[in-house]
Length: 147
Image (cartoon, helix red, strand yellow):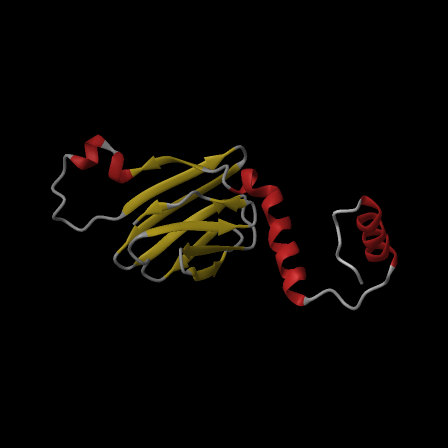
């Protein structure tokens, strides 16, 4: 096969051959790349949830002595979806409304822990890692925040 693509005729012939000639199976890395690109179609919906409350930013709570170990409370909401989370040294507890599936705590290195959501939307996880994290669930995911 020639690759003298300076000529339009040669380029059109090569394109015609590529389109009309059946090829072998698609390489697995191409399939994975296509699937990864396809997941970006809903990125705006997935990142829709915004922190509507963070106890660290609450001026009343901030005035308290920070030396006492208190749980951090976070609320994420958007439309009909709400995720309430409490993070303490003992672990992460929360509620997802509407209740569905599971909640996954994600770090930049990948999934940290996944917990099933019960019929009331509640879930429990072990201690959370320090640093940037986000929660992923059936309705989307939160934005990254620092623990």
